[in-house]
Image 1 (cartoon, rainbow, N blue to C red):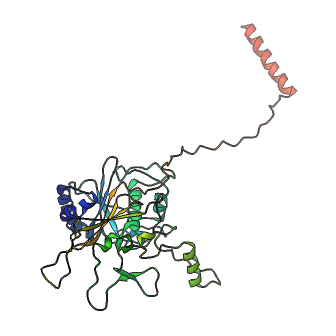
Image 2: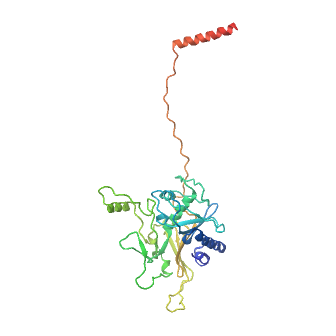
Length: 360
């Protein structure tokens, strides 16, 4: 588990971020308690999403498989894979120490999150009024936005991973046959060309991988899968951030070097020279996402923002409720006319009534 107090003092400040020593201490203790109670592993502080009423403090980790046997949608990716690779716990304040595990994602949740823009309130059970309408609570939209941010902004230094032979989607650590793993310098990481995307991208079908489908008769399974992949292609693995789409003519990422970039000779002559500077990468597509690189702690990420993607479209109107359709017109009939016999009977009854009243 990372040392949040040290990271807040020596790393986050270079990006203009500070959570305060007290909050970092409380968050560190809360994460330790969460790891013991939930059984989660590899916990790390993911970041903070601002809310209109309360904020979300978010922790990422590997969650245990669900204990219930409830039926899941067929198109949902299992926990530990795809968009549900990691589990995310949230709380409104580190001092409360009340963590809630967000639900796993369905493709429908990601599809809605791509179409709406909503400022979170800080209430997981809040009902969301958007267009198109989301028939779920705020916790599902929050989980979808976390997945989108993580997939788009998780970076690693170039050369740390390599593609698996005979595979276009799988990667492995770039461990040399002999000698230690080469570590880039802080000066090198101040260039955008030396940062690459690490996770798999989310496809148009709102999954990381395509669902298994049977090939039609007369079509080879390999050819059928190839055609599906061409129709819904994924982003290349380990793609450089310098190749990302620009935003209004500006680059998608801003890379800067801060601190002392002087190389100092270590006490051990055989050791590498020490540099105490920090390389900071800021994402302009998802404002609030930062990546850091230091010679001591390598690379790390954190997010502090509103959970919204930068878009030129800023107006998301909420439509009025759907009006009811007009009822069907019923057929009309001519007014019934009484027969002559009915008229005579009516006149006779009226005359008898009049005579009775005269006798009285």
